[in-house]
Amino acid sequence: MEKTIARRGRPKVSALTRAEQLRLAKRAQRERERNTGLATIELRLPAVQAEKLRVATKTPGFEAALHGFLEDFLVDIQRWPALRELAWNRVDRWIPAEEALSLYERNWRFVEPEHLSIEEKALIDRLTERHGGGVRNA
Image 1 (cartoon, rainbow, N blue to C red):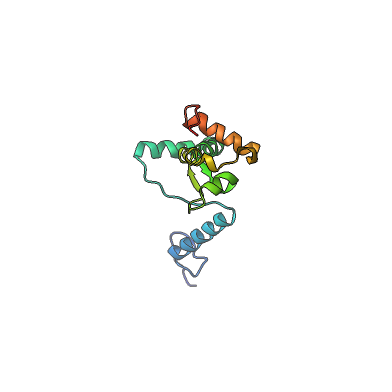
Image 2 (image 1 turned 90 degrees about the vertical axis):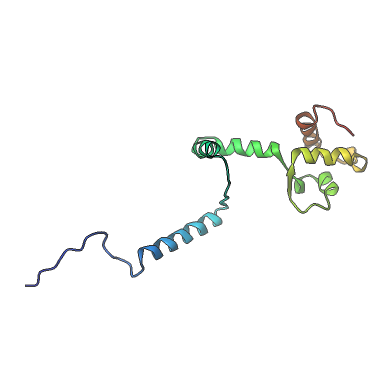
């Protein structure tokens, strides 16, 4: 009878090396995330802020709070017809809210208030309140 020596460690079930298996699994994970509309970004933050952000992402309601913050901080040019016309030469889709208010104010002579939608009027009012001190300089 032949005596077999037991191998230590994880049993080998794949012809690929462990490093290759991990690489393929990571590639598959990234593909799944892309297909579900998720994107990965890299930020360079001070260590304290990075730790706070790491903890905050695990808190229920964080995504809704982040969405609200970004809605207040950035304006989608494509969503607002009058703003889209004023920013015709812009490449970026998103601009800071203060810059959007500035565009409206500097170019108010080209805006036809009677043709603005109720939503865009509300946007202008909200931008004026938050970033213009409640006074529209137009």
